[in-house]
Length: 268
Image (tube, rainbow, N blue to C red):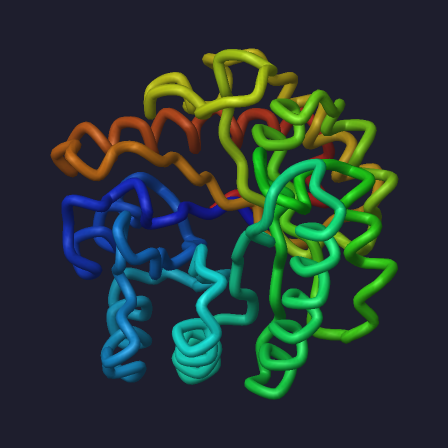
């Protein structure tokens, strides 16, 4: 597993500043935010070579990009620029509505279409089961993977969303197994549907989740993909405050990694 940082936390900064602070916080791996209306560190008209240069300048390896869109045209552009930068995985949610069968069918069909688009572009699509959306828990995640046979699709394992869908994330990990291709990690103050809390409440170790136990479950299935800290709601924070969250989170998770199985985990 590779511990990284999603740049969404540095929404008040440009890409260069965000990458500098990710590196200063001690990370070697990074997920790039390309989320309209929240944090758009990568734009469709950016020069991919300049993004690659910025990553290299700060000694960072990119493991994923978060797009958070179901717009076909925009997602096609995201897949294209991700491939040009060398980003292997693009993260989205399914959209749709929890508990609505037709919405679930429509979302699965859409994810099938998007998975083909991702494969054609040379990247993988990671779908995150998300509170309130059609794909939201362990069962709907498995249903998606059973019904979509495209090779360029997998699941984004996010314990905070699973817990708020009344799931035990540590029990979900072995059920999903090799269908997990990336992971968003953070804590949350409660295990009920709703927002994940303030940025400070999302800091690993401060909330209600047994994150060491969840990491052990991932290690047990020999998961070897990204673990990217994703803290939302900090777009108005100065970079110094956001960096404090990033650094505290890395310290906690790095310690968890060391205590679980050092040979199977890579902190960055």
